[in-house]
Amino acid sequence: MNRSRVDAEPVRVAIVEDDAEIRGALELLISGTSGYACVSAFGDCESAIAALVGGQGPEPAEPRGAGEGEGAGASERPLAGGGDGPDSFSSPASAPVDVLLMDISLPGMSGIDGVRLLRERFQALDIIMLTVHDDDRSVFDSLCAGACGYLVKTTHPTKILAAIEEVHRGGAPMSPAIARMVASSFRKGANSPLTPRETEILQQVCVGKSYKMIAAELFISQETVHSHLKNIYRKLEVSSKTEAMAKAYRERWI
Image 1 (cartoon, rainbow, N blue to C red):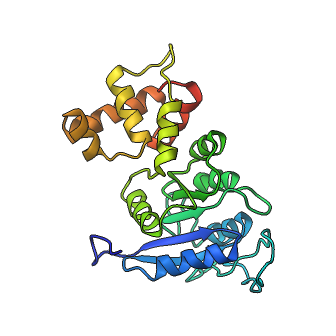
Image 2: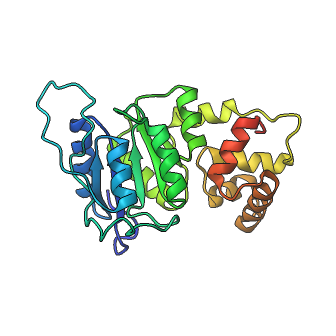
Image 3: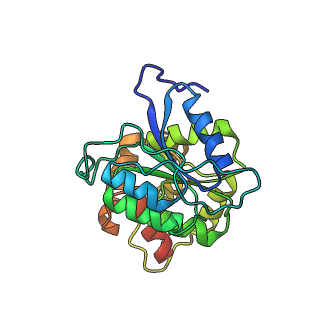
């Protein structure tokens, strides 16, 4: 799979996955595809947070043998390029990677807690959950924590790459079953501050549709979509679509 802009800088991807076989396969997939670069891979959230926040990668783990159980939390490969010290990536809006693939069930800190901590530190970091869990609690807790997308591990490799590209361009990729769950779980509450059109647009955003797709489906301009979203953010007192999705879920406003 090749990205549409082959001359663009590669999307820098990090992985947090405690299964060494899956982690290795993802590294090969990403780094072996033009337009993408796997710059780091970790076996637990603690190692990932230490590397991404401090700019220093942990010591590589000893390779795990066949048949070993999950839970060896050390990193297989630290952050590429390292950094010059704890302040190398101190800006809250700038992370040393573009997209992070995050598992949920990890040794030590859960992936959901890891998302929450990393999003507090790096507001512009795009995180996709890549997990076996497809229950509504895991999905919505992940979105509320700040995840921008949600894929199950049975997702085809080409679709994983497409999801990385989509989230990097501002989308919210989800496996089809997850998107249906999100859409069907949202019910407009009696006290919603949103108009019917705003509710409709926010629901479209929640299932991963772009401004262009929403505009085409609703027969309005992209500028109108953008204007509605500005009003949505103002009414919900949020500053991003992820926060809007989380608040709408909590309040059952859509």
